[in-house]
Image (cartoon, rainbow, N blue to C red; front, side, top):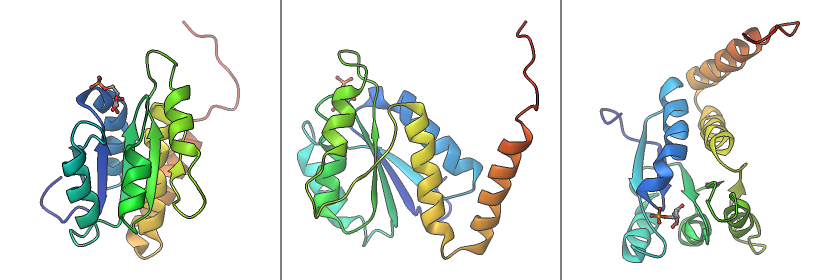
Length: 165
Ligand code: RP5
């Protein structure tokens, strides 16, 4: 999605995070929210992180979604460097199933908030929905699309369970 100026930046610490973070990108695409995805590692590319986070507001982004795993410092460091809202997605790590990622992201000191989501795909999807909700506060068309997303989700839930084949 590059023809309109991206309003949501999806950043992640590694290529290996894309399998999870692509669900955020797909959710934003389904809602027709212009977004951009980038690899920005707090540990391996700290200068890229500084450049991105310090310039994010001037670049026109309104919300940042940051996914990272293990010693997951990317969301917190990003939040320290920009006034934009940052939503953190803990990646499900191999060693500790994402508990390390979750605790690294969620326990921010008072004054530097990161809105922390669930571990893995649910967190990535919900980060995108939250980002869209923020943008929808000043975009009635997007608010309508979000209502439609919810209605479609509701319509898919059967009243009674069926045997799985
Ligand atoms: C973190 O380390 C990344 O966010 C990723 O979840 C984790 C492992 O990265 P790779 O070793 O797969 O590149 O920085």
